[in-house]
Length: 251
Ligand code: DGL
Image (cartoon, rainbow, N blue to C red; front, side):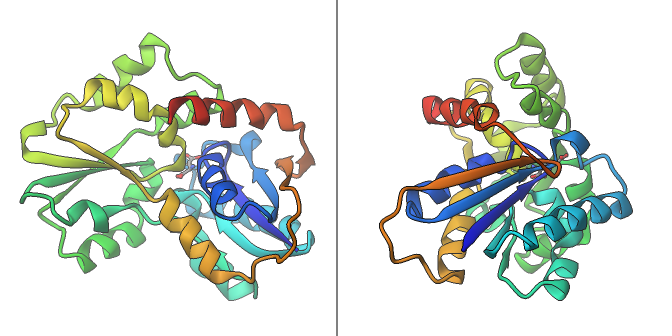
C-alpha cells in the first residue's frame, strides 16, 4: 500500500523529502493541487471542496496513510477529513512548541499563509502553549506563488521579504517558525537577511516521525517509487525532481 502526500502545490515536497530519508522502502503518491494554488487566499468552503476532491481521488489509490503536507489545508480540513476517512491522516503543525523551548525569554515570529493565521487551530495551539505574549504572526503569502513558479533567488523576493519584516524588532525575537510548507524553499534567503541569533524552525521532520509511528512499515527492501499527480492528472516526475534537486543543493 502507498503513502499519499497532499499539498496545494510543491510545498509538501519538502516534507516528502524527509520521509524518503526516514522511510526509504515505501511507495509514495504525491498530489499537488497546483492548478488551484494558492489556497491561503481562498475561502474555507473553497479549500474544503478542493481538499475533499483530492483526498477522494487519493482514497481510491490503495493508500495506508495520508500526509496533509500543507498547513493551510490542515488548519481548515483535518478534523473533517478524519471524520470521513479511516486511514491515518497526519497534518502539519507549526513548530511553535520547540520554538518556545529555551527561547531566552524572547519572542517567536510565526510566518504562515493568510488563512492559517486566521484559523482557530493556530490560535488554540498558541493558547495551549501559553504563548499569547510570546508569539507574533506574519503572513508571507506571496512566497507560495514564487515557489510554484520555481522563483527563489530573484531580487524582488528579497525586496518582498524585507518589506514584510520592516516592523520586526529582531532583538526581541529568538526564532522564526516556517508555518507553511512552501516557505522552506526560502530558508537560504531568510538566513541571508535575518540576524544570526534567529533560529529558523519547521515542522517537517516532526510530521514524518508522526507518519512513521502511524503506519505499519513495509518489510520488503524495495526501491522507492513516487507517482506524481497535479490536480487529478498524472504528471511528469521531472517537474517535481527539480524541486528535490533544489532542496538537496540548499541543505
Ligand atoms: N503549502 C501550503 C501551506 O503549508 C501553502 C498554502 C497556499 O497554497 O497558499 O500552507
